[in-house]
Length: 402
Image (tube, rainbow, N blue to C red):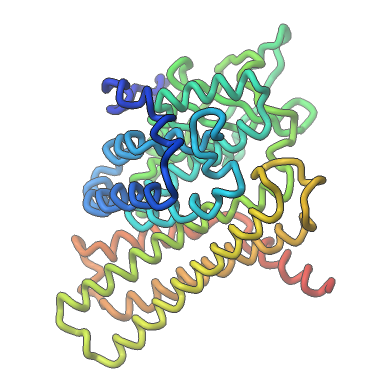
């Protein structure tokens, strides 16, 4: 492990002139064009996924294409030159489709992009107007954002130094995109025990990125390393919102529909790879294979319907994702419960799809270079999101309460 600054990525070093008028392009972009661009990128992601997995490295070319398609800027509100993707509730359905599509191409790409969307949503929700403009400028410069909140015993602490300066100590784990995400939001514990969000300008500070910590067999391309922030000093311009804003409900829980969309995309990719494998072997008339593929298709469609319903409920709840819940049109606890239902149902759908896929393709289909082998490794790991039992218990308790 060495202490290093975050290097410039391939697309940052490139000529940025194609992006100067990106806001004009996005202003006229329809939902169908957005989905079409996402589909093209996902196609390349799928073709290159085995190489990214083999290297265990950040998917740079994939994010170069994401940048050129305008998707780095898209999470910014329309007033800032974006599409409000993930921030304006009217676009939640489009966001979930894009995340599904990217997840289908490569779950690691979908995971990192979901973190980028989440980071910009939190900034636009809790930051000051000056901060929002500053970070919007960074996004327009194709910097990738993220949210790194997981930690172990040596978790992140924020120590006030006076004169509006703060020193960080400790580490974060599962830092997806480490070494390439230039603007991560991290939560650190203040002396009074509250959680304070801050943005770390990775290319301006020295951090310890421990890539050896990331030894998982799945999601290798997410490069979810451990990052030590000890010694980093920030002024208050990098602190976002008030203490404990990150935990504000129902938005914290409702955000699970984003990663659920990526998960479902990965599961849909497994359905497609299973179908292709059966066609290649000429096993399309076997009644048992047909039945299993039918079950997989039902599970995938079930997940899509859950996401569509979640998008409709988010759109009806409030115009801004992360806005003032007290002014919402519906009960916040109801949409929290529904989000927990969505993540639970999609996890179950993905697990059913994996079970049937493995039975369809057998051991032969689980050998590289068959894509199903990699997709199952990635999906099995990515499904292991925190607090699953608490989410299910929340649904049960709400039901019992009537």
